[in-house]
Amino acid sequence: MTIRTRLTLIYSALLAVVIVIFGLSLFSLLNWAWHTQLQESMRFVAQQVIDVIRLNELTDAESQPAIRKRLARMPHFAFAVQVWRHDGTLIFNTENLEYSVPFDAENRSSRVEVTRNIYLPAERTHALVSTLPIYTADNRYLGTVQILSPLTTLEAATDRLLRVMLGVGLAALLLSFMIGSVVAGQVLQPLEMINQTAKQITDANDLSRRIPYEGPADELGQLIMTFNTTLERLERSFKTQRRFVADVSHELRTPLTTLQGNLDLIKRFGINAASLEAIESELKRMTRLVGDLLLLAQADSGSLPLEEKEVDLDTLVIEVYKQAKVLTETVKVRLEPPEAVRVKGDADRLKQVLLNLVTNAIKYTPDGGEVTLSLTTEGSYAFIRVTDTGIGIPKEDLPYIFDRFYRVDKARERKIGGAGLGLSIAKWIVEAHHGRIWAESELGKGSTFTVQLPRMDTGSVPESMRDTRPSIRIPLIKRKT
Image 1 (cartoon, rainbow, N blue to C red):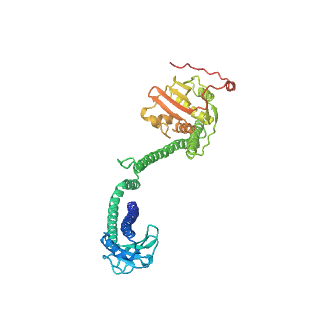
Image 2: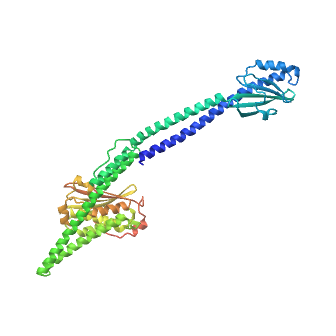
Image 3: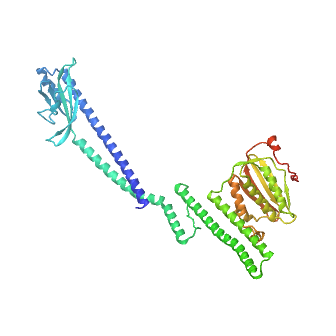
């Protein structure tokens, strides 16, 4: 059974329950109102009869003919009336329904008002009988008056009402089923679109397909947007995975080819220093590549723990500056006066990020260029900037430089020796510290990589902490104004 059919049946069943409850309530209310109105009319007639009898003592035999005459002239509203004396004598009986026996023999001598529903065999119908006692002004019991009203008209009205309600209810159910089926089909049409698109993607293995939707942003609209977003992410992940596999294959194939070539040379001509140096270089390259891949795999799986300690970020920046000075003799590395700031995190991983950024800046800065390292604070954040005067990054490549194995200039990157994983690792480490990393660049003028991290302190570092810092003489440069 389809969802459309199930929804239609559920809506119809709920409507049927509502119609039944409403119909029974309405029917019961109208039936009660009609019976109540009928009883009130019967009580009104009975009270008039009682008033006539009170004016003429019922026990006085001479007054009974006068009572009968007065009662016969009264309008009885199509009710049958009997008046019984306390000794069981029938004093008056209307002509429209003559009975020589009491309408309600069981309550003929009742001292309280009683209303009962009885069956009339001769008329083959039910009737409503009200029995009211008759008392004098001094509370003497004289007899009873019984009012009878056949329920033929009332039963016919209720039967007609029941048939009308059944007919209207069935018509409403049929109409609701038809309308519900059409509405459910229109509402569920996006689901059918999702189903068809999923089948097309599965059959054609094409993740570039999307579900067209121009409707309101309701639950189905949000579902389609989520589905399209998921497809976009799957497509991007699939492309990244294919590129990842291709790049890893290429990165491993190149050193393996070099290793195989040098081994062949050693077999043919014996061991020589150049071959051993090339083998050692390629082995180190493969070791770095495998280490970076293992690090990213651990990060993706969540099994790479990070320490959470207080880190003096300015001390860390100074240490990175000292190491960067040793890496190059042709590129000038400078440090702007760092501000004292502390962050919470893993000092080794943060140092890895900074070394990666500084190393990249040195690699892509030509001889005679400059690499500047700075640490500033703004509000509750610390900002580390690595600026170089290198070749720069094209604008169209900036959004992708933190993707794995992405290289702006593949030939130059391989020549330098990178695998395109350093910035991906840096991005993961920074985000794991609840920070951000981004790059700004202009071709031919250089690049600036910025790391933003949340601060632990908001003021200056206490003097006691300043005393514990290592005293390192660093050549500083003045800020440009």
